[in-house]
Length: 226
Image (cartoon, rainbow, N blue to C red; front, side, top):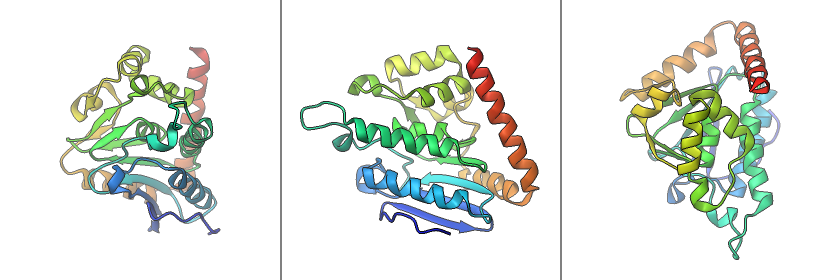
């Protein structure tokens, strides 16, 4: 694999066809920094051309998925939005959404803002019963990006997406599963995730990637028809 950007807050490993990308910044509840986004992009770029990778799993450490973008980087000292950092966060989620093999999010604990963008960018999402989802963009005066909004609406419907975005309401794991924000939640999160990624990693890779291309094409067509 090609050389990748290194960050002490982003772990990356490939075992038995499964690439695992782990956010590890416990002091900031795994909030995304500039260096973390650059490291994620580098790891995704390397993994995308690695023939060993059949499925990608993204998760957080220390019982937290991701508390969003680090507001100290997202906001300048005068309170205005840092356009360059916002664009980098959007690029990170978009690159994950465009990743060429199936992607799975393992959500434990808080999944907030840009963390939701990462989870929404994945094909499949599993959650711990104590997971919580929230997009508090309105509270921070930050406009959520168009791609993440489209992916949110595709999963939960335009009306529910509107309520989530307009109010910044928190969503627990039970409600997230009920409205389709996650595919399944359960106390045995490790088993749920392992069964899914293990199966994807061992079935016919060509068929899986063909199905993924068809699903993504269908999602784009439906989005253009709205």
